Image 1 (cartoon, rainbow, N blue to C red):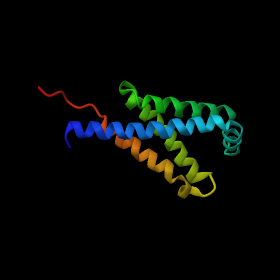
Image 2 (image 1 turned 45 degrees about the horizontal axis):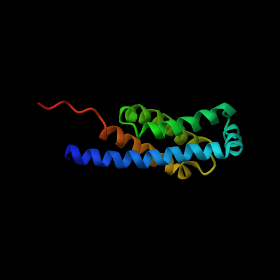
Image 3 (image 1 turned 90 degrees about the vertical axis):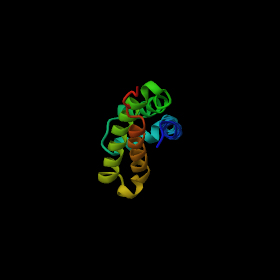
Length: 122
């Protein structure tokens, strides 16, 4: 794959993931009482709702800033690992309802691979 093709695919993936995470975080804020209740029902403190919603919005924005793509993707990977774990262990419906979280997790790993540093050519 040429560097140009890899770059185009990475930008498309970044835009899609940025939209998904920003929308998810904003949705958590828009439905804060219900989201907080759901988080507390899973045994998490109320402040964690604000933390996750903020991290998703900021991570989504970070995916659009080339300098912050890799750190944002890594942070979002940790969030998605937590989401997958919660689906597998505590959320009714199990991992079957966690498929979107698994897909986002895989796409974040793909983005990390696409945006890995490449050796300088002379």
